[in-house]
Each structure stands twice: as C-alpha cells, then as structure tokens.
Image 1 (cartoon, rainbow, N blue to C red):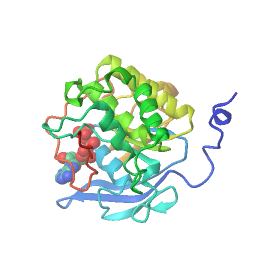
Image 2: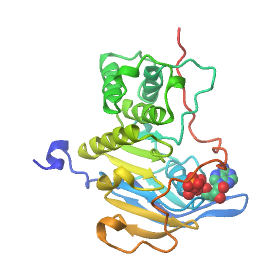
Image 3: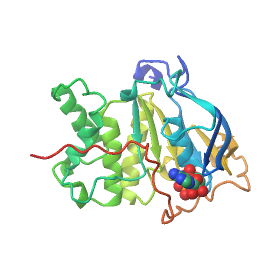
Image 4: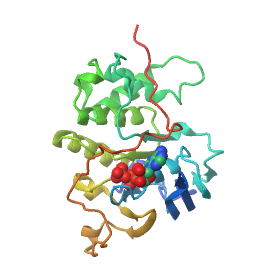
Length: 276
Ligand SMILES: Nc1ncnc2c1ncn2[C@@H]1O[C@H](COP(=O)(O)OP(=O)(O)OP(=O)(O)O)[C@@H](O)[C@H]1O
C-alpha cells in the first residue's frame, strides 16, 4: 500500500504549506536574507542547509512570521502569515528548551504544553488530549521518563521533549530548528524515527540542519543557503550524485553555537504549566 493511501490524503493537494516570495530580512540594516523564494508543497520533508550565519534559523522563523520581513512575503497554507490563525496546525521545534532553571516541570507537563493552541477554549484536557501526549512521548521514546524533571535529561533527550511537545498538538506541519544539534546517537535515532513517522503520515516537515546525518534517507529536498540566498535547491547532493557547491555547508561537522545571538523577542516562548 502506498504512503499516500496509508495517510488517507493527497499530500500534493491544496495550497503549499509554505510559499516564500522574495523574502528580505535585515538585522540592524545588515541583510541576512536577501531575496529568498521557494515553496514547500504539502507532505514534503525539506532540509534547510548552509554554513554558520547563512540565515537558516532566520528563514525558519520568518516562515512562521516571528521575524519581520523588510520585503517580500510568506504564506502559510495559502494565507499570508500575518493573517494565518490555524496555529494548531503548526508544530514549531526551537533550537533548545528554554524552561527557566527554577521551574520544576516534568517531561509530561512540557509535552502537554504543546496543546495550548488546541485547548484555548478554556476546556480541560480530555482523554483524547492525554492520549495524544502519551502517543507523542512514545514516538520519541520517552514514555519511561514522563514523570522526571526535564532538567534531569540530557540535551538530546530535551530535544526529544521539544519534538514530543510539537507532536502533542497533532499539527500537520512542522518547522524544526536544528533538531539534531548536540544530540547523542540514541536521541538522533529516536528523532529520525519520529521524522520518519511524520513523513509516513503525509505531514510537512521543514528542518534547519547542519548535516543530513541519519535523516538523509527521509529528506526529499534540500535548500542550501549561502550569504542569505538560495545557492542550491534539489534532492540532497549525495543521493543525487550532484556536486556539492563550493560555498555549501560542511556536512561532516556539527558546528558549535557558542556565539549564537539571542532569540528574537517575537519567537514563541515555552509555556510551562505549573505543578500543584
Ligand atoms: N536577532 C538577531 N539580531 C541581530 N542579528 C541576528 C539575529 N539573529 C541572527 N542574527 C545574525 O544573522 C545572521 C544569520 O543568523 P542565523 O541564525 O539565521 O544563521 P544560521 O544559518 O541559522 O546560523 P547557525 O548555523 O550558526 O545557527 C548571523 O550573522 C547572526 O549573527
């Protein structure tokens, strides 16, 4: 049976999940994205690659409307991002967990916080919501850590918590900002399994990556950024046999993030439910 039949829908139907047109973003007058245009059809698993500082994270955030465009536009599922309201369809996985040091949140609580967009109508979580949290925990292999504090987990496990949090809202479109950065081998496998499951379900997944690594077989298309522009767009280079561009990323290395700038204030922050 084909994946499409399993998923019960046609990934290519309807407007693209994202349409980015001539996007220009500048920080302090310095262009970081310099006229970027592309579409992400529904059901595509897309990697955004490029060297440090090439604008990958900025592009991911611009696609969610949390970084303002100087010029150009972004549409999400056919709607200009400023007018887009179906945020429960979008699962955003930031670069790292930003729970304050003193907040004693359990893994389960953080994962359940991913349902905030769904539960806005002042109703308490029901059995289906709890089941979605269970399923999300199982998908990333953290069922047995559900009651632990997130602060006890390794960086890789915390990354899995972030993915589970995005899954818990049952979105159909994911934007993940370097989900593999600094992640141990076991967590990398768990994350790759989770992305494989999203792909089987026909979901759209956009991932900022430094290297394809274990995700390589799942990536249908890779966009390579260089100096704020798209320098390559196609199937991942080593699968197609195409030459790697000179100014493309160094795929064998995961670069450190020590000098990373602070997140823009508009980036959605993690809401952690209080523990009684
Ligand atoms: N909020 C900000 N304010 C000012 N400059 C920023 C901001 N965010 C990013 N930059 C700068 O914009 C450029 C692109 O950053 P961005 O994080 O988008 O690149 P990246 O390709 O994701 O890099 P990395 O691989 O290091 O994460 C960098 O020079 C960065 O220092």
